[in-house]
Image (cartoon, rainbow, N blue to C red):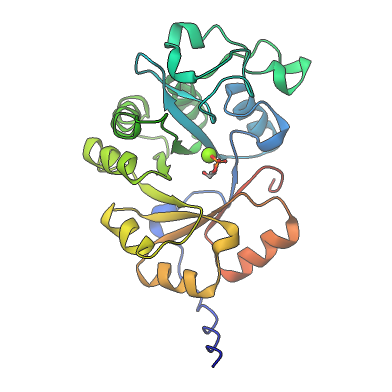
Length: 255
Ligand code: G3P
Ligand code: MG
């Protein structure tokens, strides 16, 4: 027998913890418009009008938090092979812009400390995705959370930490429990909502294809925010806003 459709969501007041967070979040700095996860991308996104940004953070071989999506270097830098092989001194000499176009050549990889300086200067809203290299979930969560605690000024919007890897979030929670956290999900395995709650998350970041009214009801009943990634079609974004998602991570939409 077909299940009845869940009733439409009643309007809810804005979640206080999201107060001030812009609706659109630029994926990897400025989406597809600039070399991902570089300061140049953040600057470009800022010029385009974005005031909230997502990026991917991992650790160099000597424990420096910096921005990189892949586990290997060749797609987005002038380096080759596993990122795990290089310390920050070696990483900092790579070119992280030329792959995106000659106009971006010379842009170096970005340390979290450099992003923090920009975030503090401009009051950016930043979602740091903990993107650990293999076997690095706990040190990445711990180190990034500790670094955010040191580097973000009290007046700067709190950085949200998110991850597909629960051990990274758990380590971040132990190191800096005051930082807001979100569980990233690309599928809804049994117990996903309980897992987000057990990690003390204030929200989840879902592949947008997972969202429906039942999922949103479940989240809202627990007081959890729902962010979605990565939405690049205006009609889909409109449908998601109408469903009641809280924030959209995008490569191409927004301001
Ligand atoms: O944080 C949302 C999104 O960035 C997760 O996927 O692979 O683009 O890091 P990915
Ligand atoms: Mg990401």
